[in-house]
Structures are given as structure tokens and as C-alpha cells.
Amino acid sequence: MSIADCRIVDLPRINDPRGNLTFIEGERHVPFDIKRVYYLYDVPGGEARGGHAHRQLEQLIIAMSGSFDVELDDGSAQKTFTLNRSYYGLYLPRMVWRELTNFSSGSVCTVMASRRYEEEDYYRDYDEFAAAAREGGQ
Ligand code: TYD
Image (cartoon, rainbow, N blue to C red; front, side, top):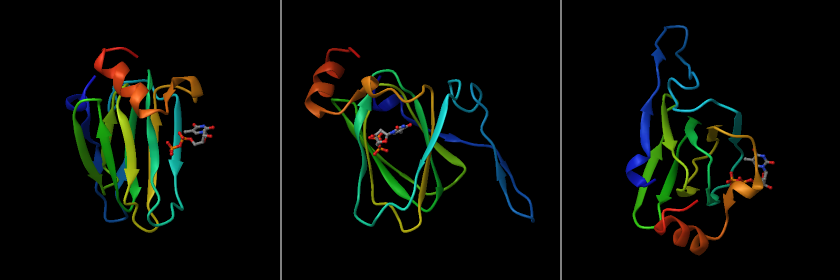
């Protein structure tokens, strides 16, 4: 997996004068069955979230409200995406280190995940992750 596998997913939009609607179907708009949803909110200004990679987990990250940056690193290359629309999702495959930064006031980050929470799926040490990624491991 590499930075090139991280991509913006343009989610369906049903525009309506009463208010707009977006929906997400597992295995259609995301290439996995959604097993878990979680969200980050009330993030104080200047704080960062993430700072880890996953051995197996795939995710779709959405700025449901406000904006933030997702800084990615596959052990070799780096790329930053800014998310600021509730109809764009950022798909992250397994084995990508991520940091979420620059949260705007009142922003909400919602994450669709391919697996339930498993601490053993995390790399929380960057050097350990980068060495495994360069070897093509997990
Ligand atoms: P973590 O994934 O490190 O947060 P983030 O990457 O969003 O900054 O998780 C923070 C804490 O919350 C950690 O103690 C594990 C717990 N947690 C769960 O229990 N279930 C979950 O689904 C998630 C995402 C985290």
C-alpha cells in the first residue's frame, strides 16, 4: 500500500431546497464492509489526533462539519489532504501513517472503519511502522 492508494471518494449528493443529503453504502462507496463508525469532536485549537498506522484496518474519513488536514506517510512518501466538505471522503488503505491537524473550531471528523477496534492492529511507533512498510510487511 502507498500514498497513491489514498484517494478522495466523491459521495452521492441529493440536493434539496429543504437541505442536502449524502449517503454511504458499504462495499459500494467504500471498498469494504463498514464494521465501525466513530467521530472526533470538540478538538481544541492546535491539537492533533491520529499519530499511528494500522496493520489491516481500512478507513473512510469525512469532515462532517468544519475542516482539518490529514497528513499521510507510507514510510517513503508524504501527502496532505485538506477535508472541508461533508460529501468528500478520504479513503485510507492499511499501512498508512496518519496525523490529523489544523482542526477548525466546531469541526467533526467521522470515520467509517472496516474492522472493530483492536489495539493490536495499531502501529504507534513511527520507526517500527516505517521499517515494516519498507519491507512490504504488516
Ligand atoms: P486513537 O485511535 O489513538 O485516537 P485517534 O487516532 O483518533 O487520535 O484512540 C484513542 C483512544 O480511544 C484509545 O485509548 C482507544 C480508544 N478507542 C476505542 O476504544 N475504540 C475506537 O473505536 C477508537 C477509534 C478508539
